[in-house]
Amino acid sequence: MRCPFCQSLNVIVVDSRSRSEGTIIWRRRECLSCERRFSSREKIDLSYLVVVKKGGRKETFSREKILMGMVKSFGKRPIPEEKLEKAVDEIVQEIHKLGKSKIKTSLIGNLVLEKLRKLDLVAFIRFASVFKEFKNIKSFRKELEKLEERKR
Image 1 (cartoon, one colour):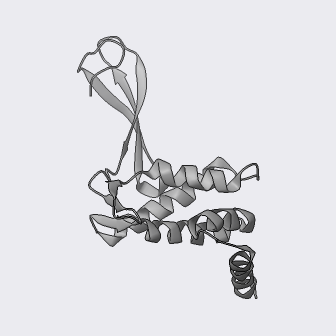
Image 2 (cartoon, rainbow, N blue to C red):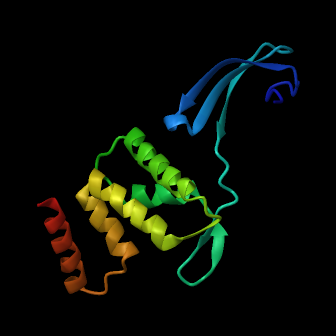
Image 3 (cartoon, one colour):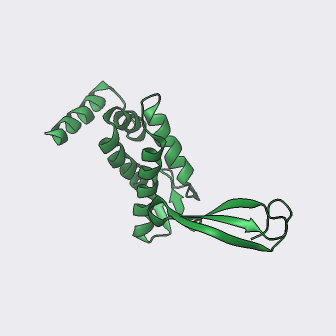
């Protein structure tokens, strides 16, 4: 790896740690030329994964899109950032375990819904209202009733 300060290739790893249940490796590095230290992260490359949208359009998988959708669902509700990041990591792991090169947005949405149901019911309903495209109060009420039944 090239030093970001002096561009030298004379860099060593002085510390490594696993993060996010082994999906990310954090490394502390030192440049032997300028003696400055910097950090790097290695994570699983999911660029091979294609997401198939409802209309059939395809795009590259984006962990950030899942995270942003969940953040919007919480709005101003309190949730620790670490808890949200862990939930997204778990969703990504589930997707990765499938071993497929194409995945439908409906599957991703359902995985997100399941995580949100466990984390926060208000965030769950907010996400569901967009994901399931409620057309009226009746369909919204039906989803709330299903949620109540699951809680029992």
